[in-house]
Image (tube, rainbow, N blue to C red; front, side, top):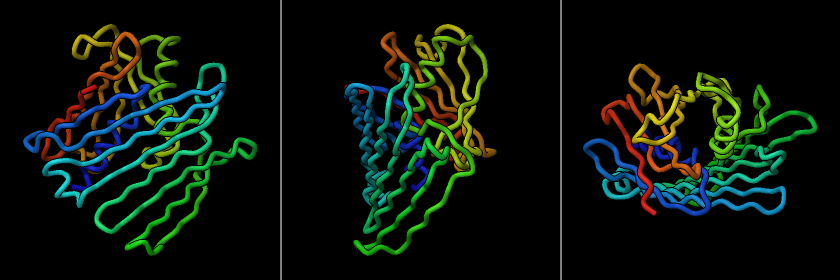
Length: 232
């Protein structure tokens, strides 16, 4: 069930919205999670927050998993520049927090991972990423959509914090025209152990206002496809 926890992150951390709700369904398991995405801008600053909660059978199998993702930073010429990205995850009696701190002066990203059990700290690790980027997982969608307005259909790569398993880069495709549920779409290619042969794709269907309405994560072991749908 830890695999489903990762799937929830992959879907919801790519969305741009004022305040919307989404649901995820996975194969025969049915609905596995609900999420609320909120976004705000003030002057040249932004803040994105995503709250995720497992439900149904997934809630039981994941020990009541809950995740909170936040990103804040600045906006320059319409592009987002992250200052801090934070993941706060709880299940059973475990709490795990991962923070990415962006230092633009020294061109470095510091990653701090801390774990608690029964409210007692049992582990903390601090490391510097081997690369620098101004994106995190939450700014990714907005900046790709901005990129999409000025570039032709094709394959591209983007650097971001939170993609260490991909070497700090993600590949994405801008298809031609409406290709996914009659919506404009983008597709990201991901490498994770829960994919068959280690690789899969995340396709997002975007409406005319730039909001994700549907999503599909393919090639998932055991489940096959995991789907995303906007509910409110």
